[in-house]
Length: 308
Picture 1: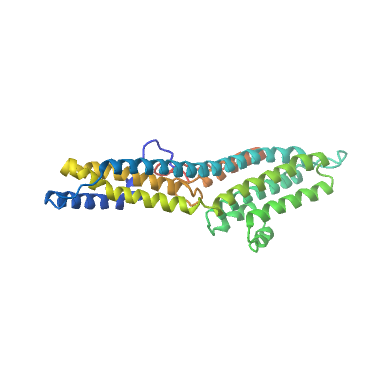
Picture 2: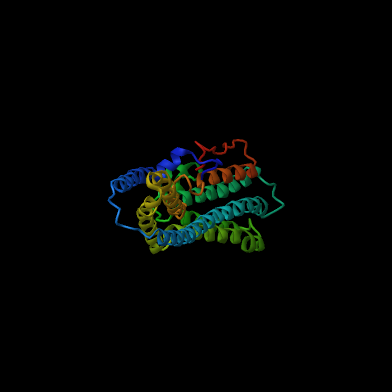
């Protein structure tokens, strides 16, 4: 996610640099041909080109609005994961306790169970992040899991689902052992598990269901038809003044189209994506502080104005 207010020139050149260079060469070619009277007997309908440009702008606006809706839905899903994670930790700390109040509580045992559950949840969140980005660095989950659980997880196709499922099984075990009251188990902890599955499903739906390809294909096609016709309508009125105006107008259209294209897929580890790494780190900080741990990692900081 780009966090700085101003967009750097190198970012613009990265996403549209070759197009800008093409507009420079193409515009220069059209101006040169016009200067040598190649278009003397050829009149281009500049008014119709303007109307076509308005239609393309409307189509661009629609497509980019839908792309942003996908991004915002993705960010909302991770916001739900953040809120539900904090609530889940409070539930675990409050609901998971010794079944027999007559037995002196062994604080170390309680702490170990709380830590096991919360760390498994942190592994679940990071597994979602890795799966959405299609990264294979599963060793990042090792600090949150026991060796046996980590080895068992390596066989799972959907590791995040298996971790949340294992969490549900563990809570059921504790409930049957009397560690969790029935009401707290059903209407508290299991509702949180359900919320985690729902947020994961929302992210997977966005990841596996792209914006209908016809929107992207025809929007890009119409943009390029327009920018190729545009200098032919300008040059008969502006002459060599066409070149700078054409480069600016054509770049506006193609950059806007590229922004929509890059925004519609929010889980690809691009500069504009949902900052899942930073969100996972912030959740880890909150949950470890709720556990009362003293070793707390630092938040991730933006690098060159980009937060991942």
